[in-house]
Length: 328
Ligand SMILES: Cc1ncc(COP(=O)(O)O)c(C=O)c1O
Image (tube, rainbow, N blue to C red; front, side):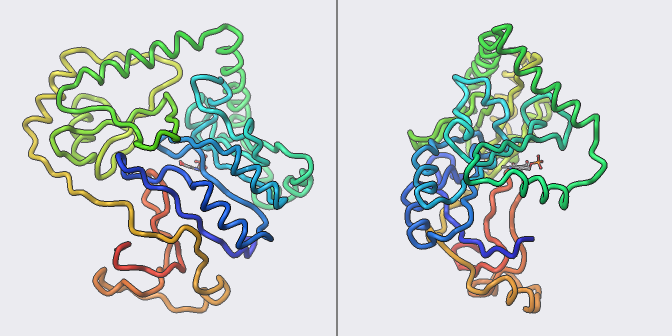
């Protein structure tokens, strides 16, 4: 919309989970040194998998160049509850943070918070003006009211000191999954990554893809948030109660044992350069013709559309990037 030319920063791919976790500080430093006139740094923290990095140094590095930092904290609206939840980017000094309240708090779908956290690098009036250009002039009052309810819900948890009960419930749910024989909870290999306690990643120990494990769990009415080649992700609730009894655990174990393994190792690591720009400016790209070609013939050509499997919504190749043999 703004006609901005993106500079893409490649994230680290975790050695155990095989998913992108965060953009390392060295990559940010390299990009800032190469593009000191950049208008903004946009980061996603946490990821859909609940993986969080310490952004403090990254943010102060960007601020050294007077570059505002915008953080997509879609999955972290509950971080305001404090420990043991990860630290919000708001506390780490990000200038603008957006949180999808509807993901982890009891807000209606679409309800999100846009936090402005800077008086010098962000012009509040300009943000407000651009919002009026992008948003409806008839906002939904039920959604806005639900955002206030979600805020009050968090306040209530803090005031009534209900956090320890919530954490205990989450812990006991996690322990139930720990009693599985044929599946296990997995965590990132990278010790710098903190995982949101509301997210639980589970993998079959008998060589099943996440998609197959997802099917097995659905047969006993456990609905996962997402599946990938290697595992499933569960989002645990702040409120409410879910009891998984020993019989259910037994039937999951039996179903895993009976199902033929189908996991194909697909590496998410394809040697992407840490800092890249598109070979052509958007204006030029728009003049190019698009055509369908077989996968076998795609390497070396320019990608015509963003490829962002959802969930988890982590881009694989963006429009205008050159396709490599490895990315195919
Ligand atoms: C990391 C991330 N950012 C942003 C969004 C979009 O948020 P919303 O649905 O509130 O527009 C999603 C959606 O699930 C997401 O996973």
